Image (cartoon, rainbow, N blue to C red; front, side, top):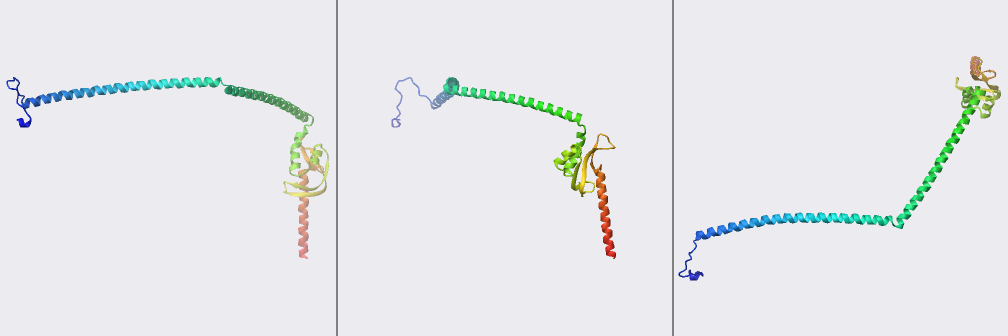
Length: 242
């Protein structure tokens, strides 16, 4: 056995050789104990890591809160510095002056508006009084308004002529006068127009021509015009027959 590097036991020793089976049993037992110890160590390591993470989170949270507090403190200090600075003070005074100017302008504008309202009310009062006077002392004027529109828009009379007619004066005219009823103009070289009270309806006025209502005058002119056409047609026929 010497060639394998093994030595025999001490002569006379009480020690006994361990059998192979016993050796493996001891080795297995030791291995199991080692594995149990390793598992225990791993468990303790995981617990330690969790505790370390919790500590890190707490530290981080405390640092964050400390940073927030520091930022708030800096912001408050900066705002306080700005409020006390001359630049902000000048800007505040400038805005205050501008506000005062605007308030003054607004007050002046309100006063101007009130003055205009008073003047407008006064003008309306005067106008109403004026209309009342016209209706009281010249009640026929309102009745003349339709005649005025007809003279202006249909007969194309000038303002001077209409003014004279409104004074209930006679106006002598010549020219072509349009009839809506016959949709044509009738010419006359010497005709007298006037606004006169309707003989059949008191308080109402009509346009008169040569002392007859305008409608009747147009119909007379239309009748003469038709007669002239018939005479002309008859002469033309007689001329053809000869």
